[in-house]
Length: 194
Image (cartoon, rainbow, N blue to C red; front, top):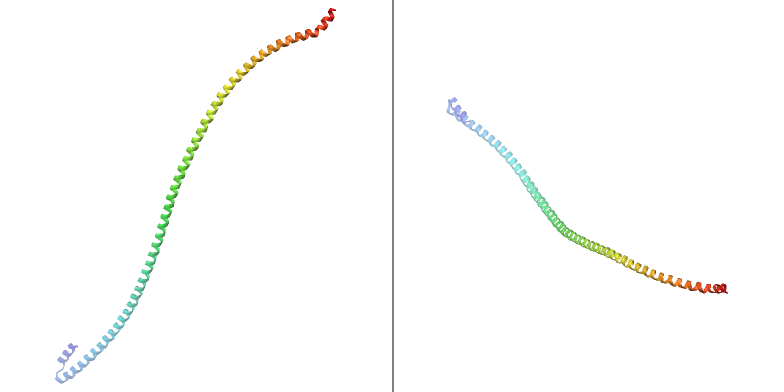
């Protein structure tokens, strides 16, 4: 606008006209500047309102973000606590099961050892009984042989006695028969002779 004012000076010949023009020009510049100021003020007010609105939105978003962050933190803390609790319970369960496995293995080993001892005892008893049976079979065989020999000796002795007795009985019987026959026949013999 200052350029226009300079142009106006060059165009105008008179100094009065130029003062009036200058005054008009200055008034127009003033109006223009007021107008610009109003526009800038309006823009500034709009910008301030916009900034204020943005700040409010930013504040709301920051507040929501903080709330979400706190909520997320509490959820995360709860999940962490729950996870740690579950992990602790699981570790306790695993430890308990490992102890039970250890105890069961110990019992199993003790039972295996006891069973092996029982088997060894049973085998020893069976071996002992087999030896006793073999010993008894041998003794029975020996006794059977002894009994057979004794029986043979007894039978031989009895046969000898029977033979002796039989010979004695035969002699006695023959003698008796001879006497009996003579006694029985004597009446017949005497009757025939008379």
